[in-house]
Length: 574
Ligand code: DGT
Ligand code: CA
Ligand code: CA
Image 1: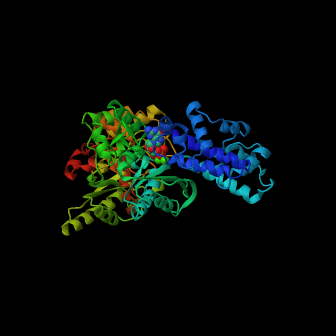
Image 2 (image 1 turned 60 degrees about the vertical axis):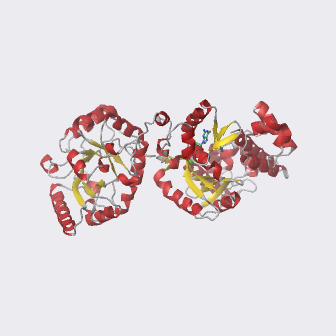
Image 3 (image 1 turned 90 degrees about the horizontal axis):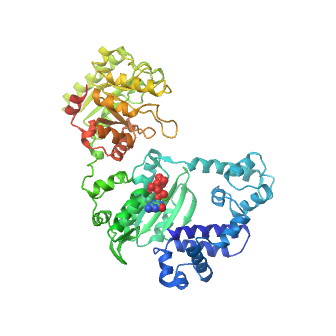
C-alpha cells in the first residue's frame, strides 16, 4: 500500500535528518509516518478526493509534508530523500537494525571508516577499527559485534515448533486483557507453515492504544521497531519479531483474512472480488463506497462465492478453485488421531518407561501407542538386538494384560524402528520382524549415496514383506540438511505397489514428509501415518505439528492410518 511506502520513506528521512543533527524535523517526519500508517483510506484516494487540503487531514501531515506526499504520488519519488541517499549511500535500515547503532553513529562510521552496510560494519568491528573512534570505545565495539550476530541469527526463518507455543502465550495475554474483545494469531503461524518469518497478531478493541501500550511492554521484548496507535512491531529476545494490529469489530474478518495470507492467496481472493465488481481489502469488502461485509471471514468468503477455507490451505495451490466448485477436501482434525506408532522407550535410551509412555498416551485420549525402539545397527541410540527386543515384548505383553484386567481397551503395540542398511536390507532378522505387530524402517546411516542407489535402497526396504512404515522418508532436517538424493516419484510408486505406509514425522525439525510430498502421496493413493518420534512422554504433544503439516498437505482421514479405527489399521499393515 502506498501509505506504508511513503511512511517508510518518512522514517528514513527522519533518520537522515538526525544524522545531520537537524532539530525537531525528524520528529515531524516520524509523526507523519505514524499518521500515514494508521490511516485506513489510501492516500491516493484521499488526494484524488481533495488534493493537498485533504492530505493535511492526516495526523501529523502539514503543508510541507502534504506536498512531499503529492510529489511521491505524481513521480514515485521524493527528491529530498533521493538527495540524502546520494550524499550518504548506505543501507540505513540494515545498520540501525543493530542494537546500539543509531543514525548519528551510522554517520560517524560512514565518514571515518566508509561503513555502509552490515558486512562492512562487521569487518571493521572485527578488525577493532571502531573502538578508537571518538564516542565509541571497546564496549561499544563489542556490543556492535553482538548486535550483528543477533541480526544475522534472526535474519533467517524460525521453526514453527520454536515459535508457536510462545505465540500462544502472547495470544492468551492479549485475550485476557479487558480492552480486547477478540484476538487471534494470523500470518504464516496461523497457516502453520513449517517456518515462520514473524508472528502476526490481530485484535478487536475500542481502545487500540491501550492494547498497543500493553503489547510493547510484554516481557521478552528487546526492541520496538515501531509503535503507532493501532499497530506495533517488536523484536523478542529469542530473535523473532511480532506484529500486532488492532482493528474495529466491523473490519475484523477482512483484516484476519488479509493478515492470514498467504500473499498469493490474497491476490487471488482480491481478483475474485474484482471480477464481481467488488473491492476486498484489509478494511472490508466494498461495493463502490459501501461496505458490504468484513466482520467475519466466513461472510467474506461466502460473498465471494467461496466456501470458507482452512488457513493451512491458503497458499493459492488450488484451494480457491476447489472452494469455488465446492470441492474442498475435508482435511483431518487434531482430534482425529487415535494413536502414535513411532515412540521410543527407556529400552533404547529414551527417558521414560513403556508404562509411562502408555499412560501419557491415555491422557491424550489415544486408543493405543506403538513402541518402536531403535534396533541394533544404531549403536549410538542403544539399538536393541533380537534378544533384547524379545524381553521388551514380554514387558509389553504384561502391561497389556494388566490393562485388560483393569477393563481398559487401551493397547500397546509391539514395534521397532529398524535400520535400512546401505544395500536396502534390514538389520533385524525377518523371522523376528514377523513376530512384531508392526515394523518401521528408516535410514540412519550412509545418507550421502547417489540418487539411484538411494532410491533402490529405499525400494528394496519397502519390498520386505515385514516393513510396514518408512520413517522420515526424505531425511531432511530443517535449517540443517537437505533431503537425501532420492527419486520420490519412484518411491511413491513402490510404496503403492507394496502397500507400505509413509510416515509424516511430526518432529518440528523434520516434518517429513513435507506438505508437497503429502499431496503427492495422497494423489497416488499412498497411505500415510503421523508419528511423533518421541523419546520422552511430553514429546507426544508434538503430534500437533505433524497434524498441521498433514492438513497443509490436504490429507483427509482416509489418507492417514492413525485416523482409522485400530482394527482397520492393523488389517492394513502387511
Ligand atoms: P512470514 O512472516 O514470512 O512467515 O509470512 P507471512 O505470511 O506471515 O507474511 P507477513 O508477516 O509478511 O504478512 C502477513 C500477511 O499479510 C501475509 O500472509 C499476507 C498479508 N500481506 C503482507 N504483505 C502483503 C502484500 O504485499 N500483498 C498482499 N496481498 N498481502 C500481503
Ligand atoms: Ca508473519
Ligand atoms: Ca508480519
